[in-house]
Amino acid sequence: MSLTPAVGQRDHSLGPLDAPVTLVEYGDYECGYCGEAYPVIQAVQRAMGDRLRFVFRNFPMKEVHPHAEHAAELAEAAAAADRFWDMYAVLFENQGALDDDSLFFYGRQVGLGTNEITAALNGRYAHKIKEDFMSGVRSGVNGTPSLFIAGERYDGPRDADSLYAILMAAADET
Image 1 (cartoon, helix red, strand yellow):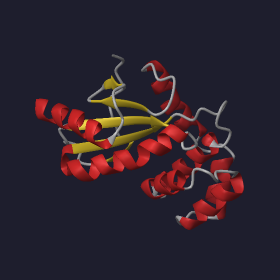
Image 2 (tube, rainbow, N blue to C red; image 1 turned 90 degrees about the horizontal axis):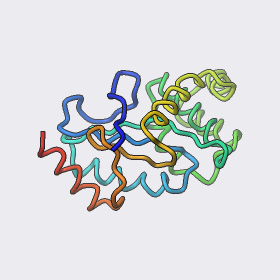
Image 3 (cartoon, rainbow, N blue to C red; image 1 turned 180 degrees about the vertical axis):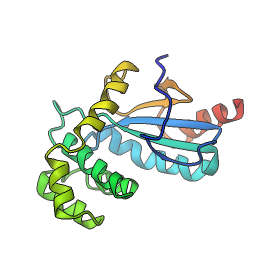
């Protein structure tokens, strides 16, 4: 029952600040399980609407996913240009091609300039990614995706119906 740090301004979030329930995902863009969770979370977001706030935090497991850290860095560069969620979608929808050449292409696709992409891939946002990663470690994250509902770790079923049911129950408790 590890608790995740409170959601703040530094987080990437979708949904109202005052939504009755918050779902936090610690994820890795190269993780196949995170790729499977991506459409599930989208479906739950659509179904819940304003009753859900979704937060994504970087947890690149670079020892097993060699492109995950650069993908997270590119996502942070997109965030600096207010395009995080566009990049988030592009990365998950193109999980099989996350090498630097592909990342450069995706960066240009969402409107980033060459200098922004190069700086990102050279570590400009490494501190933000490390902060996300360490907050996950402190919360007991040891794999991805790791989900937290209303601050508590959720290890239950990950299909859309099950996740929707548990999130709605949590929303109704508030």
